Length: 385
Image (cartoon, rainbow, N blue to C red; front, side, top):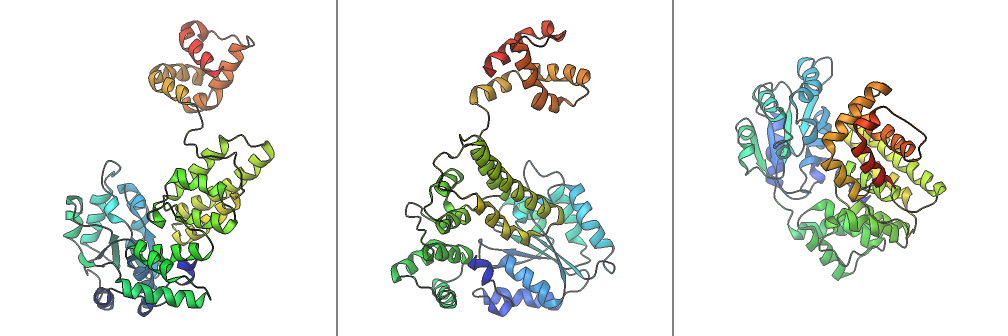
């Protein structure tokens, strides 16, 4: 993708926010043990993540990149950061970067925010945080322990110059109208502007979308399998700016519920498996730069195939509803079966119960517990028919 190919290699290659970049450079140049961590605040695509990576490169630090999902629990923070903070000399010259720090709060915060604040109070290595918004109350404790630098949207005139330079390097052109459309819809987001420009050059034009980055999951999956070329499919795939796990699950759910033949299904699932393995490796190693390869793996799913349409669930709504209302009864049943079959309750519900219900329906299996749970079994058997 052009957004990766033309990513700035040094800080002076960046555009916009000159004063903010100068403050960040000054902070890093004067950093010493105990210096307040840095919080970069601004809209997506304004260069917060890029400048963090370039700082580590330019000043010779080893970047340890995290995001909100990595720091939601105290145990996870200690697991990742404790070795770094206590063994600086052994691990080289580490620098910590936490992206989307404004997203670690809420119901899914298991002590992560408090543990992070404790680390921010006594930093032993350079720490940079990035957030899209710092106005919420949940950011108050973090803001007390950091130096804040604000990044603004890139001015339109600079975006135009930057885009023209990229188009020249790629030996590509956009009409004046398309150029205005791309710059206007990017709303100061450099990544969005470059991605949309590449899509338009390659022939994909999302006419019905207000913004390149607003294609939702359902429209994205459906449009992907309706695409007339692989370039159009690529544009659609990259426009689905959603969580990687959610993207993988969306394609899996849609494919597994389709009416395609077994041979095609096997090929699709192998590709999904490769994408899942890559994402698992990213989570395990925290090497988020590998994420750039995820869409290229998923692109191998492209076939102009009308049989595949977006589907969120791989079991019917009546069955989901029945599971919801009879959850307690099923839990009791699975506990008894788990003891008899030496499986976990979840394994019984997922793998064993469907087979048992089928055998009972066909009168090929007789269990003592049938009398105890006869009503539930009869209901579940009816649902399986």
